[in-house]
Image 1: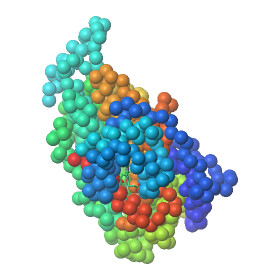
Image 2: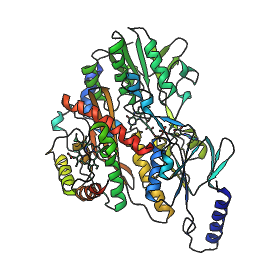
Image 3: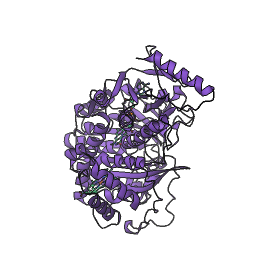
Image 4: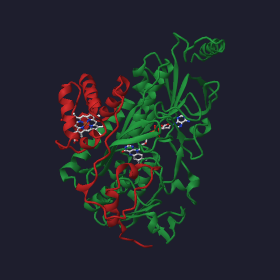
Length: 131
Length: 421
Ligand SMILES: Cc1cc2nc3c(=O)[nH]c(=O)nc-3n(C[C@H](O)[C@H](O)[C@H](O)COP(=O)(O)OP(=O)(O)OC[C@H]3O[C@@H](n4cnc5c(N)ncnc54)[C@H](O)[C@@H]3O)c2cc1C
């Protein structure tokens, strides 16, 4: 059996192929890299997210998504910051800094791209009041 | 069980509705019944949020087993970083959240009468039904593989005895042997799972049988977080893990459990241990209930996760079609919350809105090395779309990889707390 060295080529292509296509079983595969793959720094910014509904129900759902990592149990096991009880303005400001590339983080810079200002303020207010 | 009185209420309701009077979904004053089948990540989380959404809802969670071993972190059991006990959860605390827990196997759903039937013949009525049955393995999807063959070539794609079997085989194999992982085509449960498994098996081998190797024979041309995985394998386990994609002949044509071989277009590969991850489909109950399409998966509406095939039945988790969300535990819990709040609304004749969902999958490479993929998804009229997210940057620092390994533990604690505590 051939043990090829395709791997090193694949690394470059796949790293830049974008997450949706790489994850999605049904989405169209990423376009073949006919043009040389751009350097990571030159990767295009993700499309601007369309407005998310800020109904109370949806804000509660979004907060639920945050709390998977920001609950007390998660924090106790692996040191994620607890948001409950923090000032809503502080939460929102930190969130925007991640989103705007002004604050380093392992994952928040990526997550924060999915939410616009209206959602950030509403979710921050909600989270600050959770126990 | 107040089965009979409940039936009468429903019949009464039907009679009034037939007479043309306004009638909400549920008779006023009665407490609506929601039955949730499947006590995995999707089902257990949905049950919790149904009660949070509306404590007036009577919620029954039906699960065939008394304990639940999580697939998440089962690869860490193989790597020696977790024990089976540490990934085993019970349903003991759910009654204190107002959830009735019924252990048994549901074998049929009558969508007209709105009842589910257990293997022993007992029935349970519902106003709305939520299914999170997970996946079933398609033993017909790979020639030579079968339930019997899985006793020699474990899939370990449902955590539990199969995980322990694979672990014992790793412990028994000689140093210098090859562990083969046969990976399936999309869609399947946990897209990064086979590649995290390769790392965790390499972690065990590096510490115990350093001359051994891991060979991944893949039915596809690329895989989730591929660049990151290959970078991480090279950093932590140099020369130990080899991946062969479909374009290079990696797709398994058949397996032979007696000979311990995998056949590809280039011949037969012999393995000291062979882990076959076969193709999958929605759990059998989804098929018998009639909510699965020909693809084997369940199409749903993304505002409610109600089946597109049968009204009154919602499907979340691995069983539903929710691309571009992956089939993951985090995704299942996000979908469960959407379905729970939508069901609460629908039972009270309120209209649910367009939700926002999210997913995160951490993959553990070694105790000091984690990577992740995350996504935020909004429901649009034409489907779910990713509006934010991404994978760990390729140039992430050593410190950040170490932090991600720690955060993976936090995620696990959070997601299991939400479902089982
Ligand atoms: C090796 C591996 C690693 C993984 N790692 C991760 C990870 O790190 N992060 C992540 O997010 N995801 C991970 N996953 C994916 C995750 O396990 C699944 O996506 C998740 O379990 C899906 O939840 P579910 O509710 O759809 O199904 P399940 O969790 O499988 O739950 C289904 C439940 O329904 C019950 N059931 C089914 N039919 C019936 C019936 N007829 N009657 C009664 N009970 C029934 C079953 O017993 C089961 O308990 C991993 C998967 C694997 C295989």
